[in-house]
Length: 209
Image (cartoon, rainbow, N blue to C red; front, side):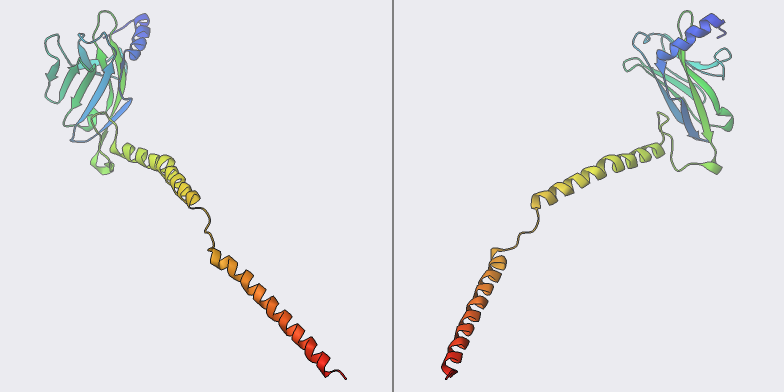
């Protein structure tokens, strides 16, 4: 896959024809599956999986053929879903030395198309609490996304609902009997006071010589 500089520049443009995860992780002794998606028009081309930090030194490990969309190897398999335009590569029995830079690509006349993927193999001594799924996205990432959704969406929505309920209920109203009673009470007090005052004046007038 050696390419002169001019064709190497064209290979960089090929990254827009095929895309995959930048980084994927797998547990030592386990397996991982990488999915790369390509644009329409490349369905019938052969697809490959190679290893190498540089495009020029990338060594093809497994590839499809014109008659086989799925090819199995001892620890590798590659499958081309032409309907959904997805290349699936599975690495089994992961070892520490499997860690490195890989390329998911499309074979074509001239310059191949490919996208760079970093594979990380996690050992048992620092095994994370999440496991890697088929697309290289960890369940730990899904948990973080859930909490972000909870904080920024669900909690504010709950506060809005509670506020709407309190606004509809409005402030507590005092029964009419409670605010009418002081009026009647004050009227009775003033009436009794006037009666006693007039009675006092009458008694004082009778007592005078």
